[in-house]
Image (cartoon, rainbow, N blue to C red; front, side):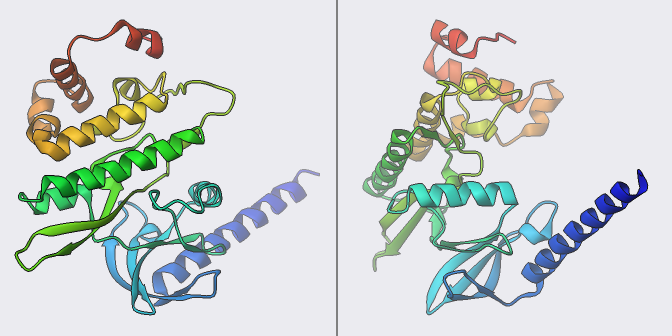
Length: 281
């Protein structure tokens, strides 16, 4: 009586493995991806290699003379992205996919020249007016997200995309900017703050409550956005950590160092933070 259910489970697991393996092999070996829209995308350069699973590598692609980004997603993230694309279909400030392949779990995005992180690192003389333009677009994106009760939870310079052109004298002019990467986005439905068992988002750009993983609200995104603004206007040396080994030699974690820097920069810990976090550990 117990053998048949076990056999069925084993067969189901095997079929699931073969299905996943087939899709993964398809993504690795295919030179062309067909979106569910019917459009064909020719794979090009590897843009980002996944740390552990090459089936999630990110590629540049072309179609009809335009550039795109092809990214295979785990199913949960794929479905979240689809939900956001449906809800914010007409947004020009949120960088959402413009096509997809349901069977392979692939999303296709418009290609941008740079992230804000690379744009600033690569051009010390980027005009302040162009930086302001990017930040204004991102602020509008966050506002649009928040109006629908969503929080991003990972606002940082590498999740901000920008397109630009270059004048004859080498000066860059930003034509558009958008906020992207919604893998850990969350919508408030029936609650007013998010409590987790762990920190969430990138350590260097988290709010203090993000470091604790407790009491996160829309204000958490605004804190991270404020850090991005400070970085964009010259506070990189104070905000960014470069020597993790030196911290480790002193028994200090990056999170401890970052929180200490924030409180030194902004002032003493407000009582409201303790109330929001509700956990002084």
